Amino acid sequence: MNAQLINPFLVAVESILSQFGVADIRKGAVMLKEEMVIERDVTAFVGVVGDLRGNIAYCFTAETARKLASAMMMGMPVPELDEMSRSAIAELANVITGNAASLLAEEQVKVDITPPSMIVGKDIYLVLSSVRTLIVTFETPVGSIEVHICLEV
Amino acid sequence: MKRILIVDDSPMIHNLLRKTLERNGYEVCADATNGREGVELFETHRPDLVFMDITMPVMDGIEAVKTIKAKYPEAKIIMLTAMGDDEIMTQALEAGVEVFLKKPFDDYKIISAIAKVI
Amino acid sequence: MDSRLVTPYIESTVQIIRQMTGIEVTEISEPMPGSGEILAYGVTSVIAFAGTIKGRLLIDFQPELAVHIIKNLMGEENPVLRDRLMLGCIAEMNNIIAGDANTLLNNEYGLGLRLAPPMVVTGKNMMLASSKVDSVTVLGRTDYGDFKLNIAFQGGLPS
Image 1 (cartoon, rainbow over the protein chains, first blue to last red):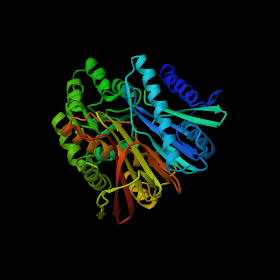
Image 2: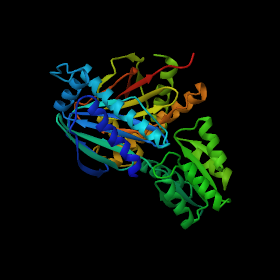
Image 3: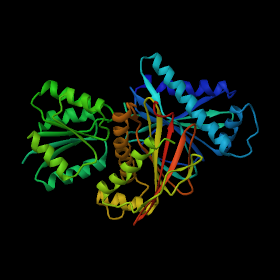
Image 4: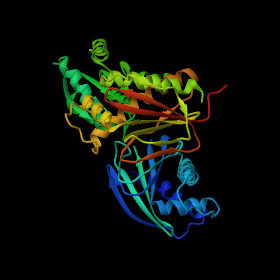
């Protein structure tokens, strides 16, 4: 996978999270995998079509998801991951991927994104596509976020 | 025996299509999982016929057909794909495929398409 | 939700399961509107698409039905679900179903829908949710197990 096409997805994570007050984000481990067992509780994902075709997934622990949902809802307390906070997390995936799409458009790469979907549950075996997935872990003050970038290019 | 190259990113399609072709007396000479590999294996094997998917990683089927046809205008290619709306079908025919087929398929669909081409 | 956006997915699902696996859908429910949150049976494939409107098709199988489908598609006697190749069959069948229905919708209404790659998951006690979409659920039954379809759209057909 081409770094020029991957970078906008990583830049978007930092830029959108900082807009919601989650600053001091560090990029951690990078892995390439074909499929995976997700140990985290919440996975939100968004499809990409157009000049690129793929899926981008964001995985969080329940605790990180609650803190992020709270940050997105103006600091409103989120004691449990209910329907409203789940929808906030789906929206976060939507906004981050949408921002990446805008950054790609500046590079003359035209993509459109699909509505976000979400999986809640543990020990889930996930295959995102027929190609390998690049997994980048971001360390943030509210916990780590795994970003799975799977592009068929 | 006529030799056929299958280009598709789904192992299941390779498996189903190979069985269909073999029980009807055709030989599958090579399997490619993306368009670029398809072009390379075409050059190596020079098959009598190609089955080509469209949406694949690395290089899509439309590009692969154009690349093969530019160098080997006599190549025979059947497009076999999940999406078959007018726009996609037009693109495939303009790229030079002989026949356009939409998945799923059965023996009759595959064999009657081959009969039109070789 | 507009039945013109729903019916093609139901028809394609029933036909393509029959054509590809030989399994008959013996019962199918009416589309039921829901919250968009689905408690999964266990083997679930999601394929999203975008064009002039956006949407996604989710197909969720009871594990025993998924095993039977894979057996018929791959000729494996005892397929293991937690396997990339085996689960890939479920994803590819979803791709063909969505491709079939979207072909019809594109030709009929000029929606220009294009598919993202199908993804597939398996696990126990999974909940799948979508956001900012209208969705309906359809329940289906076969001799080998049950399945659910969830069809979701953002936006409607041009009037």
